[in-house]
Length: 421
Image (tube, rainbow, N blue to C red; front, side, top):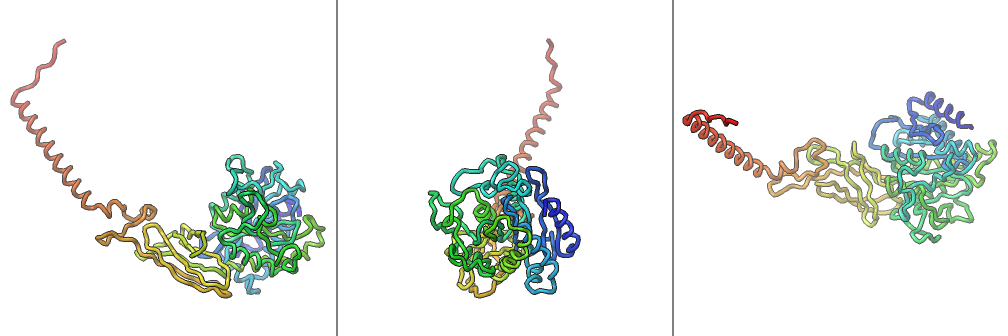
């Protein structure tokens, strides 16, 4: 479908499925085409203690299969909500955001890059090389994605591409630019997520080129400035790059077959957010206030942050293992618990106790003071403030008495004569 037809289809979906969706734009392309997003949830647009997932299609203009399959996915979920258990669990337990086309200008031009002929999957800041560090030099589509992730805390994501058949995971690049396996801290989790997609696919896992139908990006071919690694490093979002069709631009009558090949993969990947990992919220024992703290897993050098509003966290982990989970927050004592993940996720809420001084007064962090609590300085130095008040009051008393004494002397001496010039 054309860009105009896609926009009409997105808006028509929003009207047809308004009870479980909303449509919004995250920005515009170089040529001013809106980047439309469909959110699917039982409470779209509301903040809930649920993970958020995003699908992005058509990153490269000459790879349009993703935009078509994402519209089929949205419509299938809408048609099967409250009928199919998988569709129902996704709507009720996840906030699914779908951006069918990140590069509508490139699609119109039928080329890889955008209207400025820039490859959008090389336009993000890179961890190894200072490329794309100049904000104003980035493309509007790239800036829109980065702004989007500052506004919504996504747990996981996938971008859809064409030209191969494999589920790709971080890291995408290496420091020495050599082609070799370069694992990120969550390598086990990413391999698990990639295997969820590949194993649910019609034939991706049978690949002779990629064992199990999955690959480490740097082991396949290193890239720099990619969206996948940026998501993981800067947004706390576990993103896969999915190559879903050997043919980049297949004929139209092949789309339904490609949909059937990828349908269960797309659904199961989203559902994996609630079927694995550890989820919960972080609270303060002092009044039950939500704490936007942090979750750390022993042995994994990566921190997941709870949301700022309701302090919910969603820490994806590979199934079939024991994990030691620690919750921390500035000004609070950390807490640790052990969990065992089998074939289902688990929920753990943490209630943290504030650190206290020798008098038992909580030593609250500066960020908590902005939440309306009393000043840390006031709590910990009350006596100093009282002493300063007494001293200042005494000095004011002495000053006033001295002024009164001088005034009486002047009244006794009579008025001072004016100077004559």
